[in-house]
Length: 338
Image (tube, rainbow, N blue to C red; front, side, top):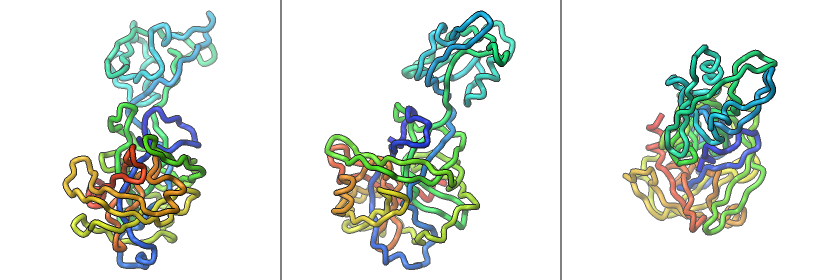
């Protein structure tokens, strides 16, 4: 969902894949009420470094004897995860050239394909232009997408986003080696309908929110950039789940441009101890949001939920068969994760 699977292309115009659902309250309730965090609701562009190196293509290597592709000849395919070379771990793209450049009699490349480990013998060749050894693979070690910032903790220079983890194509939580979270811009929306989730379409801007440090079941967290300006953000207090009640709330989200708006929802169910962090069931009541998006769509994950002027959680998932409904995580769980 994050936006968020490993097959998402690393380009600066990206489709969002972050789903969601939860609770809130009206704008005028935000007049400086002694809150301890700044409200998010604005889009973020994620460029996260992972510990998996995925083959996204094969290419010919030009040698003094002509062109060839050692990887193809060895049986390596697009979609393979390069796990190790001669039993030494590969965690980033630079590891491949480093290990291939060494003098070994054999080069055993272990890949993960459809959940199975395969060890293939590859014979590197010397590239004519650089003189370096090459095997003819195009790889990536990052994942990109669009989501929503939940809150900014200026006191501790931290930020929280998404409300759920970034996962790979098999829905497994990705281990990250850091990354950068940028400001985003929403330029289009695909409306959600029953059976087919909608999605926000966004672009990543150059200005930085901060550095990503943690990808966990409660979201992506990081260290806030020193240059990030909170002057135009709303300050809000956090509420524990015992303060939440069934009934009217609001989500604060951006479905076009960069400026978030408040949209009315209702909290239909509260599940304090849900093991999947689905602490709320929410239903979109706002006519404007329903007209624009059909309800909750991919890319809204992390949108703050407000009730009685306090931050109570963030949207996380949508009901596939009813885009007007979704789930949300309680802010206590998000706040305690990093």
